[in-house]
Length: 209
Image (cartoon, rainbow, N blue to C red; front, top):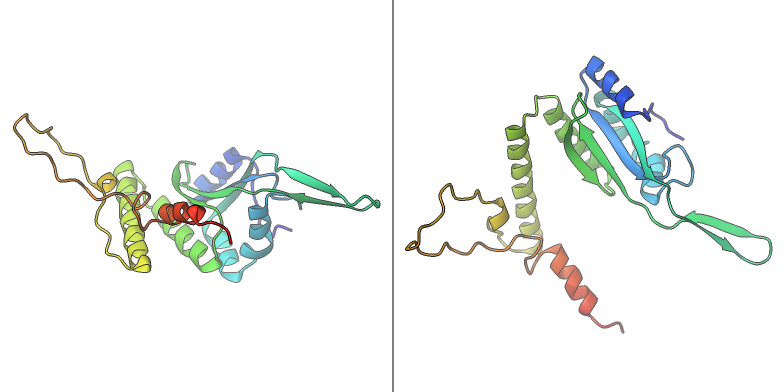
């Protein structure tokens, strides 16, 4: 059961957001948020995340709420052969989009979060969404967030990450024929030996006992 008012039409949410000067929290999901068999992620949101007192207060005080079904959720039915059946969803994907009062995207929070992390990230994006998020300001904000995540990841795995090539500004003038080759930048976290992707690749190569 939903404990807050959610708009199901983005145009209606934008009209209210403009009137109230609030950002929009827009959930994109498989299935319908108001149905029991929506995707697994949205069931977690509906039953655990949104009822949390900290999250509930943030949703009520800071956002205009909207949800949109991207496509029907896959459902499987198991027949036990004795008249009994069991029906459940078999997958779930979701993303919370933070939009400014005009409906323009500011940030996206994909997947699942615990309550404190969700409040922290959504509140930070709400602050930006209500503070005239011009394109240069958005770029600077996301670049700073990315560098913070890189540092946090380095601290977690016990290394000191350096700025990778993707986060360095490109040169304003191309090198001439006699210019020395530029120094090779370290790989980005997504491809480095200590990145989550690298750990997953190594895990897949470990033979099962």
